[in-house]
Image (cartoon, rainbow, N blue to C red; front, top):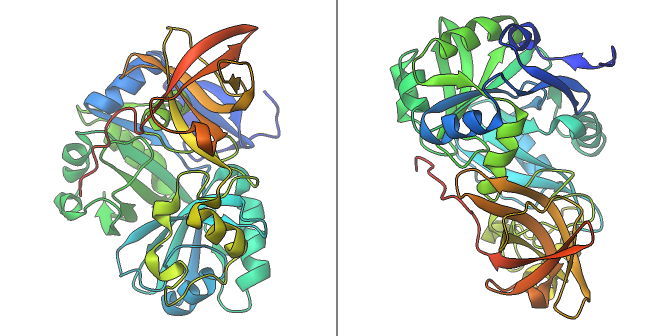
Length: 371
């Protein structure tokens, strides 16, 4: 493994637990532990799994009101009206309406707390500082780790450390002491299950992870299970299912653009690519992200081209796997808008073989968030 890879504060713990480490977004990250991806996937669906997501970028924008107004010039979501303790998913967009990154924004009493993708964080920080740095401070938090405790029994495990966390509902957050350490916790995650993301000082991360792993419901899980879980949940992976060439509308993320930011709304537009995105909102998106279910038991992976019955190219697969929970091949893809209706059949080209797939509603496995 290359010596240049960065390590999260939990690196030695992963090695101790027997993790298979792989390069990911410049970091050495655990892809799975000795039990394997399938067991970790099921652990998260049935009980609780602990993921290290410390490679993600955590940022703080002080002066919440000023920061919210500034951030709205770079994202299509309503940030100004976000209440204290509320979290929102949005995207940083470019001039052509494409997505520079997707991120989570939580409004706290005195600031905005942002979580951005690992592979984009240096660019995101530069983008924010360049465009809104004169209106609000943009403060990276490299001294904090991030743990994701996910699954239906996550709340039981975490509540033993602080019973008050059970009061949080999906997409809300607050400060809680765990082991006497002040942590910022949101009830959110990227698995489709109930769960929490815990921002903890880096030097306290190993002790907290060990205490969580001591809970009978919890086992560690790596990037492999995180990927199959998020795919079953119909959630986008940046750089695969969304990128600088896809608009939020094409990506099926129009729900993340609130009415107040749309045409006719009080604060419509005034963010990069607004004209393109508004045209797409009005029905002008040329392609659409869809779910696909394989009609044969052969997984269809990222990059496979999709054709109609006559061999005309319709689009391409952006993520695919043999899904453990739904027990069939699933994929996400972009299709020409006129072929994106549920039930429509397409053919994926896999090593010269045409495999039939059907356009399907997402998520493939139902979300079980605590609303």
